[in-house]
Length: 448
Ligand SMILES: *Cc1c(COP(=O)(O)O)cnc(C)c1O
Image (cartoon, rainbow, N blue to C red; front, side, top):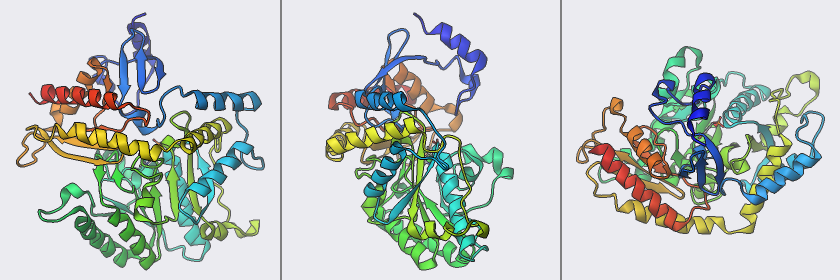
């Protein structure tokens, strides 16, 4: 069966995310017939290696037998019940396990049904905490340049990615934007840790000026993903924790993209040996199966809400599908897969292969800033390697890479002109080499 009948039907009724629909059908729309492991397959039998884990959600491959079985088992009991006044074993077990795995002191789990919701939950919880403890003047937030925290209005307000944000500015609240710790921006002669120190000095200035009115600082630890796979030294996160303590504000760690082993440790915060006041997880939480997110927080925060109803201190936030049982079952199966293998160690091997394969592109005249943190590797296409001059955005060189990839069995979906690999952990070494070869040929063609 050809792809075209589905594509035609689709283009009449669907409006796709993060897509200028005008690009279709010149840019092919691919209907997926089935997916298995790292491979997606269309109706014409063509395959695509999912090198970006279906937007960073998939950890152990598509159609994983153990996760399939866990969801099926839960389905035979019940699919979903409200989580207010009622509870269920999958939500309880998942909370227990997350509390055990997270940095010590994060003892409470509040579920949402997507990443952006988890961000909204943390922002509201932090503000409401300060109100409950008699500091209602704290209503502001600090974010880091080039941050991305989701698309809903609050999450967008604390994001700093102009492309996604600009049209909606009139709707958004103002957040203070601290300088970027992105190591690429360091001055010559500086290392990443020194550059992190410089960025922290900028953060300190903001906190010193606004310490009385700020609720929290929100950060993506180690890798700012949607902002262009910008990586920083763990010293930044360590220093940020110290600054938040010094000025008495919360630290929100958004690990929605980097949690669950992406950066080389189960949680990125571990590399800085810190505990945030709020830890946000989503995406890989269910192994890429079902939408679920969670905001973990401390006893201190929890207790500020725990009072007689008449005090008005309760956190009355809710989402219909909070703690969905099928999603919790998928998440538990995902944690079980983690428990049964040493994925952190095997990822170290895969990450080394990724780094080695990408190393071959180091001298390419249009490739700059090859960088890697664990299972995330990225590079930038540049017009001029010596000056780092970018291509004009309208040339859409990254899109050319995407199209070339589709013709050569690789799903590479660059962020502008930033190319990256963020594959499921079940990718084979030869598949990594193959996908990097496709990437190299795609770069040659896109920059010719
Ligand atoms: C994807 C992402 C979000 C938003 O999650 P959604 O499930 O897409 O709403 C928030 N923060 C970070 C760091 C992300 O990468």
